[in-house]
Image 1 (cartoon, rainbow, N blue to C red):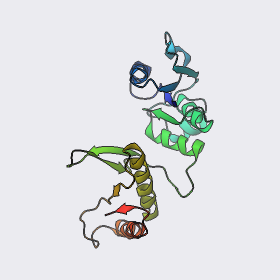
Image 2 (cartoon, helix red, strand yellow):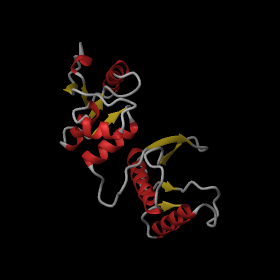
Image 3 (cartoon, rainbow, N blue to C red):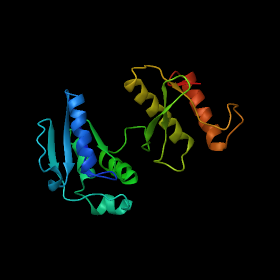
Image 4 (cartoon, rainbow, N blue to C red):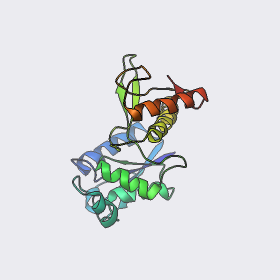
Length: 206
């Protein structure tokens, strides 16, 4: 049974929306459990046995700076939800709150895997084949080195292989054209790294 930690205070509407979503999730997924993290008063009347409440005393606001979220609000619902993963109580943490704070706290608490320097935000977009294409990075990083983009490709490939049961997903590089000579220096160098990884059998790059 998988356990997910949920920052119930995050998002534009907070518990009013997150708790209703958690309730629907538990009904749809009888093999899952939730750790619901938030202020004690947010859970008045909550009685779902597979949704355990974990109390927090602070909330990261949508306009809080990274310094406030990371250094001053150490008992925030967001941080406690992430710490459930570090402690092994949950396999993943979910928050609809301040994205910058979420990435910074997750990186500080959980660190990154060996060989990965930066986290990335992934999202799915519809494609012309009727399926979806997973794109990285969608907001965590403004400036990236070619090595960062190669690492994003590795993470994206691993993510899709698990979520879609596809052992060898294709990897592409978004550019202004498909010719090797196109793009800025970062894109050109990234293309070289991805082609080398493809030839080595590490990625299915095209």
